[in-house]
Figure (cartoon, rainbow, N blue to C red):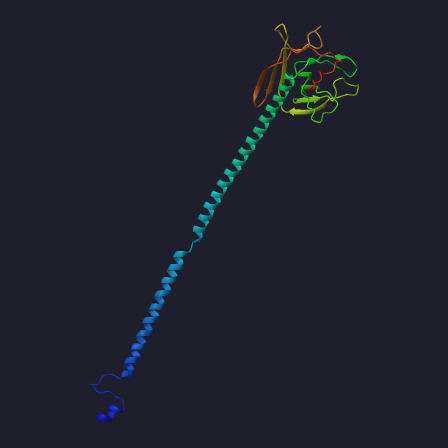
Length: 259
């Protein structure tokens, strides 16, 4: 009977449990361990994903900081552009002042004793000066094309409506319709004051003196230019008064020809 019971698959009191049951139990333990490992790995992955992301508060703080830095950078660039524009404007202004004063000084230094005829045939002195205007005949009128004209030029400088203007005549002795070609050399001028030094050592505001020779030139001209941004500029310019006067109808001396 015991043998029959063993054959039928029933274990006795001293017999070990069947092998199939032990296998099933081992397999069940392995499956449970795998599920537990999978659950722990998923939790670790979820924790890593949560740690690598940003919260809404962190994003808002980052955007606020970025916006503040962008505003500061834009303000700095705008300030730099404004300073650069102001420096360029001051440089242009200073250059215009230097060129205008240099050209006026050049015309005065090249003055020559050459009276001219006015629009109505009257004789005008070689240099006519008032406190804010001066008209003179000068040398140095460039003639690069060797045209049949004189190298003398009649120019006028003066202050008109807070602007320093320069006028140039096409001819010395004028016709009734002759007018100077005028252009503005310097804007925003507070004042222009000219004085003329005579041979007696006295400064005058008008030239020539009453009863003087029309070909007479002053020994020097004092220039005072008042500017709102640069203050007052003063220059004293010596004129070539030692040159012999030139008659109104006399032609300029011709250059000597080489033998």
